[in-house]
Image (cartoon, rainbow, N blue to C red; front, side, top):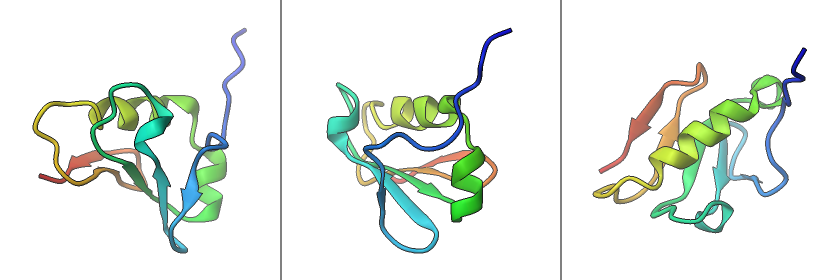
Length: 79
């Protein structure tokens, strides 16, 4: 059985009580920082796929300010 890694990567920075950010240096090709909207408890149980997906969105052409991930894992693109 494959083990699922939970919790944020060490590069994440807490911006406020509910906003976290992965910098553009986190993954090659990121055009904007990736912001995740979640409290401490939610961050602890997010799996690596959430961080992979939001940082993939941050590499898309045309994205301008941030890639946002909502608390339930849905992603919005700020343009």
